[in-house]
Image (cartoon, rainbow, N blue to C red):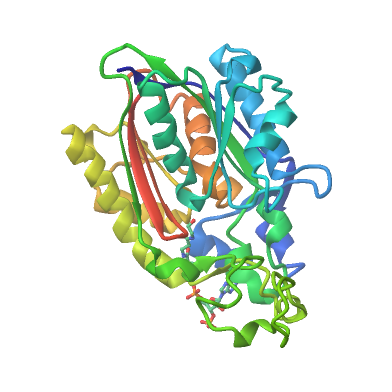
Amino acid sequence: MFNTKIGGIGYYVPETVMTNDDLTEYMDTSDEWIRERTGIQERRYATKHKETTTTLAARAAEKAIADAGINKEDIDFIIFATLSPDYFFPGSGVLLQRELGITNTEIGALDIRNQCSGFIYGLSIADQFVKTGMYKNVLLVGSEMHSMGLDFDTRGRNVTVIFGDGAGAVICQPTEENGKGVLTTHLHSNGTCAEELAMIIPGSHGGYHLGTEQFGFPEDDKPGGIYITQKMLDDHMIYPNMNGPLVFKWAVQKFPAVIQEALKKTGYESTDIDMLIPHQANLRISQFVQKVLKLSDDQVFNNIQKYGNTTAASIPIALCEARDLGKVKEGDLVCLAAFGSGFTWGSALIRW
Ligand code: UT7
């Protein structure tokens, strides 16, 4: 059995900066409210019609491939985590393969839908493939273009101000070095709160989970034609919705618990963590987790101030930035943790 190391890493954020003040042009919000509740100062927005979730992913992937010192044709498997895919189907994995110009059709492309926990779910999957010797260069990407799918009317403000666009990618490779690479991963889910942080339209549910009345379905029982109704458009139902306070309450419990789980499994203490990279959900959540685990400022990396919450991309973007700043170094014990829609949550410990 091999261990899985991160042999290369890269990220890409679009050039356009959207400040909190910029958002006040579209909705009733304020820089003060956003900073105070979330810590976010600005986020990046991709260029409509010119960039997509896949093109952002490709820019990050190219950097990770170069960083690993490999060629794109060396990639033997793609894992793509996103909640804002280019298409309903096919998934973005094959689009990324095409965008990168990977002509090798021997490879597989897997799309995973675990939202904020997507990168950790993806890392766990990559780890299983790599440590058994099945693949040697797994390209794992988290990418989001939220800006295309948010509600810029005031009624969407609790969600819209939080999210930003960006992508992060890693190359997962085998190593025979003892004690190096991914030491453990932990994945969890609880579907009882599925709709509390969700975008449920378009979808095949036809009102099954929530009752049909509110959606404005046609009276007839002809097959088809129920993915999007005029009422859904009129009532702004086509956007993500979030029960923020409920998500917050769950997040501040599950983050520390799943980090402790990883520490317990490997016999480490929180003082052994050199760097915690939490999913960048809300700076207040990260600060709460830091306090509960009694971590110093030097042990936690946050960049939500600049990029907002980039969902599946937030961990690889932060990990890469931390590495580039010399805050994640060879031999460091790095902890990754996430919580989000599903609800799903997870953690990973890596000896860098
Ligand atoms: O990636 C994982 C997924 N997401 C999260 O982890 C998010 C977790 N939750 C949160 O971060 C927080 O719940 C939010 C930042 C989303 C919201 O903060 P909050 O302190 O929980 O606010 P709230 O939703 O309870 O709303 C408080 C007030 C409301 O006004 P009233 O009813 O008290 O008059 C909202 O309408 O703030 C209002 N509000 C806003 N005001 C200005 C909500 N969004 C905004 C806004 N600007 N953007």
